[in-house]
Image: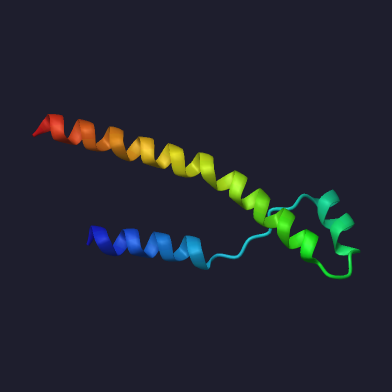
Length: 72
C-alpha cells in the first residue's frame, strides 16, 4: 500500500505541468519569437524551486525513520 501511494505522488509530480513565471517575466518573454528563452527561464525557476522542497522532504524522512526506529 505504501509503495502505491509513493508511486502515485511521484507520478503526479512528474506529469503536472506548471508555469512558474511571474506576470512581468511572462509578458516580456511572450513577445519573443522563438520562446526558447521563456522555456529556459521557466525550467530554471522550477529547478530552483524544487531543490528546497526535496531537501526538506529528505530531512523529514530521515527524522521520521530515526524516531520510528527508536520506538521499536
